[in-house]
Image (tube, rainbow, N blue to C red; front, top):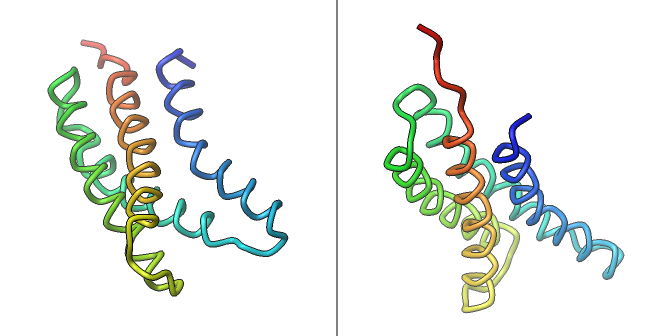
Length: 117
């Protein structure tokens, strides 16, 4: 496994780590885990659709922007469905989770192996 891919995995695990810490501290609050899962699904959509579209910094940047947007959107939707009142708090959490998944997506694209000729 390349160092970029390992770093991408570690960064993508960060939102789930926060969710587990929150669940352990409260004893019952799993909302961060659900929001992290929704954000991951949002980020996975452009990664899956752009699987063979390109490599390099430009492709990584485009994919990261799409992943960031959809990840934040899905995270906020999940939070809303869980009964969270829309405000600055959920926006910060959704943006932080989305940023983690967007960076992980960009690193994932940059870590792709070159096809053999």
